[in-house]
Each structure stands twice: as structure tokens, then as C-alpha cells.
Amino acid sequence: MNYLIFGNTDSRRAKEWEKAIGNNPFELVTFQAIASGQFPSISVLTTVRITSPGENFETFRLLVSLGGYADSYDLDNEKGRILLHAYWYKGWSLILDKIQAFLAINPLAKVMNDPLSIKQAFNKPFSQQMLRKAGIPVPKIYCQQLTGFKQLLQIMEDNGLSRVFLKPAHGSSASGVMMFRKSANKMLLETTIHLVKEGREPKLFNHLRLQRYQNIEDIKTIVELMIPNHLHAEQWIRKKRFQSKSTDFRVVIINKQPIFVQPRHSNHPITNLHLDNEKGVIETLENAWSSLAIDKVRTIAVDVATVFSGLFYAGIDIALDEKDNPYVLEINPFGDFLKDIYIDQKNTYEFEFSAWKNKVVQ
Image (tube, rainbow, N blue to C red; front, top):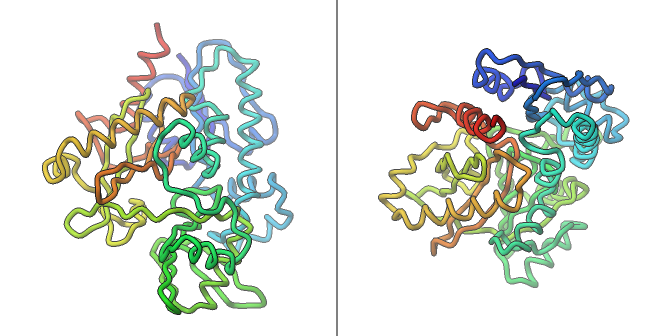
């Protein structure tokens, strides 16, 4: 079998997959080539793996340009700036549509994660709606699309809320996610968004450290600038704590099985490991919380995999509340990258390679 990778040449995920497939013949086609319609000829059974477009500035520029952002070539000095996610998502969807068309005329090409499922997973409100219809517990969405900061305050007052999560419809790696609390006239916004107020207009940038804002005008500015990203207000799940730290799980499903269940601990509710949060040990939590609680996490991950049946692998973020009720927070079609984490001396990519061969090769 041959292997075809769609992705960036400097992608850590692509390189890990190359290691996993060993000496098998493979070819990498960049997103720039896909945008130009440059696809290889397929004459033998070929595994197709679509990798994340993230971590590459030129690909980011390509996607926002395809999505309609006219000034993408003026971004050289603004790396990390949060633009309208809609530009990125539209451009990414166009790339996925081209891949889908390629697959349709090449029956020997067997894709691991199909483009439609990837597109759906990158639309948070839509994917939550899919899960909710299937009876899978997800946080309540109080407003599908906010129109302004004043409306946010009214929603919280009407629902008796002191805290909410604010999330853009399209994004990953906690980009644009905000934790907002208010009590009387005091407000606190915690987020990976860095507000820069130099020049004529304020600008927002991604940051690898959690930023805290208590000035009401700064909070209002950030929320208002994020509103066009199809920002929605979501229920704040009070995550169960372990050793006084907020805890949730990144579950990597492979062929609809929860193979890796990785606890994540943090001093705040945003637990993404790339933000220097703590990797937990699943056996420790099974002993501390009971295996029954962890089984709920595994079971709901399988339920999600059934709904997103077009994803051979994915990372699912799941939290238990203080009463051990599970909630699916997000599904990431590229969420299988767990650095330096192994089961039986295999990382996620090596598990995927073995499972895929058993599934495809008769």
C-alpha cells in the first residue's frame, strides 16, 4: 500500500506519521499544491491522511486569502493575529472540498478522516448540535451567535449566570476561547487572547500564556472584536478537581475505540497541554475517583465516535462535573498528537497505523 499525506512539509504531525509508516512508499502534497489543483495519480491502493493546516504561517495566509481576506500579504509583521475565523474556515473548507473531489474520482484512495467530517468538527455549534441530537451531553449554548457585549450581559442576567465560556465557531488550540465572570460591577476575562492597543485600532493576538483582564473597557473591546467570529455563549461546566486542579480528558479514539485517555490538569479551566498544563496519569485518577467515573469518559467517547463515523481517529475533550456527569467539550479531527505519551511502547500514530492496516488490508 502507498501512503499519501496532505499537509505542510514542516508539520510535526506529518513527520510523526511518516515515522509510523516506516519504509512504505509515501508522498506529501502541500495545501498550496491542492489549492492549485495539483494532485498525484493513483494507480494502487493508497492511504490518504489529511493533516492539520496549523503551525504554518504561509498556510494560514493561503487559507484566509482563499476565504476572502484581501490583505493577507500585509500580515508578515502580525503573525499570530486573530483575524475573522470565518475567512480561515471558508478557505479551509475550499481545500477540503478539493480533496473530496479528488477522492471521488480515485476509488483506490482510502481516506482515514473524510473531509466532510473534518469540516463538521471545525464548526463547533454544528458539531454540538449533532451530538445533542444523538443524546450525548454537551454544555448548553445560551446564544448561538452574540451580537454585542450588552447582549452578553443581558443573557447572563436573564439566566442568572455569573460565569460563561465564550467560544468562536471555528477555531482550535483554545484560540479565541474566553472565560468570563461577573459579580456586581466587577468583571474578569481570562483568555489566551492578547490585546494590543497600539496604533489607530486595537488588535488581538494569540498568546501561549493565559491573559487576565479586569478593566471593563478592555473586556468590552475584546468581546466586541471577537463577536464577528460567530461567538457563542456556552455553559461553564465546573470540572471535577484533582489535587485542587481543574481536570478533564483528551481521549484519542482510533477506529471507534478510546485507546488513549489522557488526563489534563490545570490551575484554571483551560487545560490544553500546549499551554504548559500538566499531563496526568489515568491509573492515578482511576484509583482516586474510581474506575466507574473513568469508564463514563470512555463510554461517551465511543458514542461520539459513532456520530462522527467518518473520523478514523480524533481527539475528544471530555469533562466530568462535580457529580461525575460527563460532558463532551469539543471534538478535534487532528487531536491525536500526544507528545511523548505511549501505550505498550506505541504512540498514537503507531497505534493508528496498526489499526488502519487491519481495517483496510484484507
